[in-house]
Image (cartoon, rainbow over the protein chains, first blue to last red):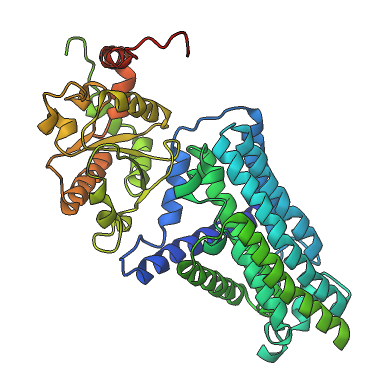
Length: 296
Length: 190
């Protein structure tokens, strides 16, 4: 019973943190463009408004898989240790998170494909192609962790970084960090890799047919994805955090760095994006793996 | 107007839950631009650094499904009316229509043209009109702030008017759309 309450609280916290980050990043973008920008709680208002509107459903699959998309990412969020705390006792296995996250993306893919809009199908095709691009470098980075520690439990990886900034993997494994930062930029759909959204090109791609509550669910899903992805980078490379606040602050810094990168680059085409990720992110990841195996 | 049914403001405002939701709706308005007429050039300054529409939570959206506001700029020709009605009907409730410029109000300088319609309000319910040829970005922002106040007070009820008077609007639309049917014989081709 206690665990059920923990799950709900954890899910709400993940959504709230993600939405807060999104709002602040919009404010940061505005300030970079010398605008005043929306208030930092704008994303919360957007989500509540989206849920207050009527929505048009095309079929049962669309409803079911929209929920499945959110559920998959929430399941992944349950294993992200916020400062050593987890909603229920587990070792927070990295492999499990990497399996749950695609369930979220695939749920959204099936949901918007069921709407039958050709632009949505194009967007999903691009998103899944891009997924091929960033999953492989990230998987190689995970392999370099396995070769170092023989485990994929995030808690033990966090413990290995305890005791100061010189033990963090950002210092010990800089190439792996850069590779995962590039992969994360693509995972969060930020600017050089925002080819699946591309509002001017394919009318916001996967979201083209989402109205009202579906759009609200998509926003929530993105917010949870932001929480999980920045949480992974924080736990793996930035030493996790002794407290929840420290962990969230590090996540926040990671997301703001991604936003800053997003503001200075133009959009890649999908094949350029995949090639860039495989050559540069993949190359850095392979260098890190080789170094780890050699130094061991 | 004949048997045109108007919505009383009271029945909207008295609903407490609607009032709470209107608080959020007025602070997050997503806009779909229907810019086949003139005047689209006034919108980039409104959006970007000089006038910064986003500080009121108003932003551009790509499709009718996601949008709250349908902004119709400039003259409406008889052929684009069909697309406007389609876009409007694809939008989920609550939705608001803003006519931009003089032409959607009364035809403007195209009032005697054979190809344009004069009163947009006869075909879809317009919540707010921005007059001027063209309205400058200040006027656009002022109009949008007025729309925000109207939503707050529960006065922007165009979508309910459309539901209640669906037949009346459809009759007006049909009268125009019949004129746009192809004149030439297509030789059996469809």
